[in-house]
Amino acid sequence: MNSNNSRSGIGGYNAFRVLQPYVRKKLTEQIKGVWFIVIYLFVFQLIVLNLPIVYATMIAIGLLLVIVGLMFFMDGLRLGLMPLGEIIGSQLPVKAPIVVILAIAFILGIGATFAEPAIAVLKAAGSGVTPEKAPLLYSLLNDFSGALVLCVGVGVGFAVVLGILRFFYQWSLKILVIPFIVLLSSLTWWMSGNDILQPILGLAWDCGAVTTGPVTVPLVLALGMGVCRIVGNLDSANSGFGIVTLASLFPIVAVMLLGIYHFKAEDYYGAANYKGEIVEISTASAGSAGSISESDKSQTIKGYTAGEFIEYLKTRKPPADAEITYQGDRVELVDGKIVLLNPEVVISRGRSISVIEGIDHWDEKSNLLAEARNAVLASLQAILPLCLFLFFVLRIVLREKASRSQDLLLGIAMAVIGMAFFSLGITLGLTPLGSQVGHNVPSTFAEIVPWGHNTLQGPTIGSGDVGKLVAILFAFFLGYGATLAEPALNALGDTVERITVGAFKKKLLMQAVALGVGFGIAAGIAKMVYDLPLHWLLIPPYLFLIFLTTISSEEFVNFGWDSAGVTTGPITVPLVLAMGLGIGGVVPNVLDGFGILALASVGPILTVLTVGLIVKYATTNANG
Image 1 (cartoon, helix red, strand yellow):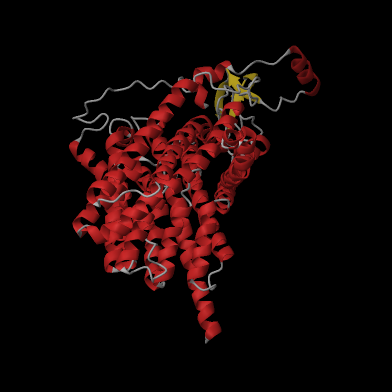
Image 2 (image 1 turned 45 degrees about the vertical axis):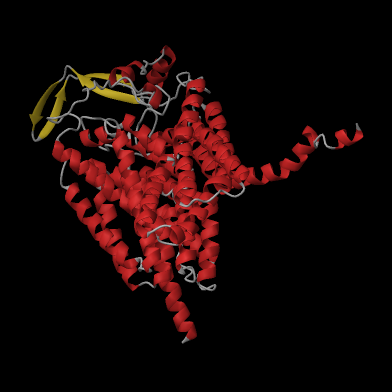
């Protein structure tokens, strides 16, 4: 009996004590990447905008699910998918011809894209696009959403293929990036002159940021590094760089080409060959998202009370919210002056700037069980096919057995669970929070209906440039702080400091990337606030990047271009995307909220390459 008892296990309490430090460490890692964004958005809305958080309980639970989901998902990747990628990458060059290697790399790129959590946010973005104003964009996000995601995946697939070829033949990243930027700039300029194609530019450029997420980057890097070890190119410290850059550029062209195809086929919304349904857009149907119709607006305006009337009789000064109109008057031109004869002056209360009381803590329209079921199904559909493909390559193509199969299966199970939690957390927390704050930011300079309210608010700062400047500064500090909180940036900083033998310090790189992201997101908000064309903000910096890339050394080009991938973390992408769509739904004349991620990606490349040139110049002078 005693011997049996000794083998009975460690018990629930002891198991908890053993696992507690590990779980606490992993949770802390994820909280470090989330805390700044969440607190910053909450503080900005509560203090600067003076608005309560709608659905606060639901958002809090959603954010907790995001943190827990990321903990499981990232550990699942480390235990399951990444070891498979490394094994396949190390064995493929030995046991398979180059054609097979490239075919597997291509399929892997597509599969990794479908497994990206931010892809679900991209699919959901179509609901906020008005089909009459942007018919092709509406169709891409609704009628052709499956083809859109497939095109993005094909773009990543081609990028991985080119990245593998680059590792094999040791091509410089410069000779791949510069022609591609010329092509992208030319297509962007041409499409900007077409009223149908121009609205899809923001979507196309943002798709490049969506692809470089927590699944694609580690998986394709694991495959690429495995190939590097075999082909003998790992002696160069830069060999691991570049593939992330290519994976962010190719999808842009793929989406552009998809849009051009449907434009030529005339099968988009409202065109001659369109086969979908023409939807009726109701102006009064978006109350929960923060918009109300003109008739609803008028119902929120109440008259003055008897006490306010008596106060007016005493002071003869109209109240601060008064609107003065003249009725029944006769107007004449007398000696060059416009004279109103016997006018009837009416003083009425203007639009109310108060918000409703009794803020909901949970969205009644949200079906938690249905959302959870959809999250689990989406997770299984994204992760399992990718894992089955990796196992197929390992067993059938390479005829290898997976070592530590129990760890691999545990990792895959953790990745599925983590992605389900994460997807549900995005639905309940990140998307409502980003949409809410994004929708409410314009209240700093304009009168809007706050998200989830039914009365008008603002401008809280001023209707001129001061209020707009506050909105732009909000975006800058959001991008700057969120980037510094990204765990991947620390890893990049360590790598760059090691590559440059201390010439490019880790702190300097982190500041350069964070400033670049901050300026990029600020430029994205300025684009919406001032209704600037996206191509004005994208083409000039990318043309300048061609110059910087040409005169920079290969090592700085490699990690400079890949630094954009750090900005597109699993938290940043869905949150900024939702925030941009929220702003785009409120600011007049803005068709959509796409383009912020694209500008947030080009910013750090500019700053890192510029600082790199300064560091190189200073080092050369010091040695000279």
